[in-house]
Image (cartoon, rainbow, N blue to C red; front, side, top):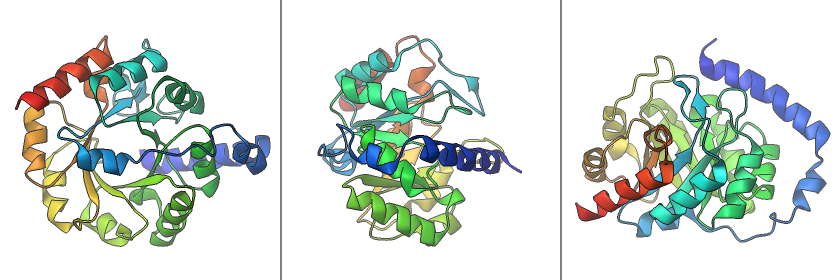
Length: 262
């Protein structure tokens, strides 16, 4: 069992428990459920920088990254830095996040919010909408083609953007469908945790132009972004590079300003 298998097995139990505790009707009646979600895909297309900044406390590959910063301060710092959107990790067991983090970020900023989660059930998409997300993440490595279709179409019915994450050509080829907005290439090998931007480069020509291309993981400097832009990428998900510092928002601001000068 690799780390992804373990996470998904735990996630199935967690989702079953949450379903028993909070009925769908309660989610649909939440204050945020009917708000109009801004589009992250549109924001990325219109941006010269394309930064999606992430709030992440820890990860299976790096253990503790930053347990000190509260999510409101990070969200406000990121928004002030001029990022296109913010990714909020809501998995508790492996990443130290929660749905409350999403709620607090939503109360703090207007920028598009991506719920970074291991989505395996439509219930989680309803949760995402109810807690203020504008975008959901689907991970091709844990879903069949039919599940990707079902979950992405359900998200679109709630006016949420969909970012589909792939790690290789096989995952990409099974995933391309009209109900996606963005195709993200994760540069981290989930089996070894090694990171290589070559993954984004090699898959770039296989992603149809109608989707916004997003590169994820291992981006630590502006030169990497400029290089990836040459391969058609318009979005760049950066978490650890900002979160490992004492002031993620301030570091994101410096990063964005440097990008604009280049």
